Image (cartoon, rainbow, N blue to C red; front, top):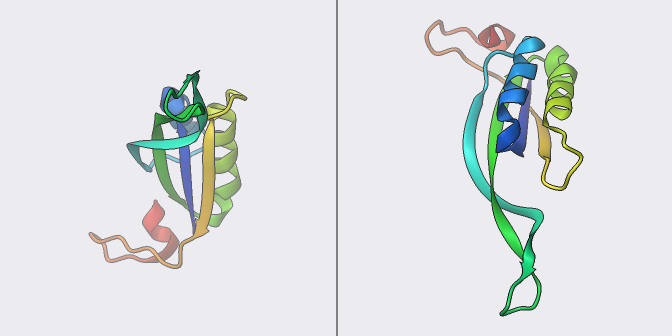
Length: 113
């Protein structure tokens, strides 16, 4: 199992959600988050004479998928979230050792259905 975490533009969330549903990823968690990235303000910070780093609002997605869904999940996010501009976001992938479904006491890949 893999954990795919994506930080994307908030304005692209609906498109990403739709793209994920189209490839069969129908369950994930998301949050509205703020952060500082490469985006800068169009004005100079008067105190430091450097461009001010902007705090931007993003959508953070956490998706657990079976190994065979990793590539299609990443592709769906990449295609739907891309504007080819600074600030499009990041995707991180990590391995999940085990998963449990509390209600049924199942474990492993069966918990993702």
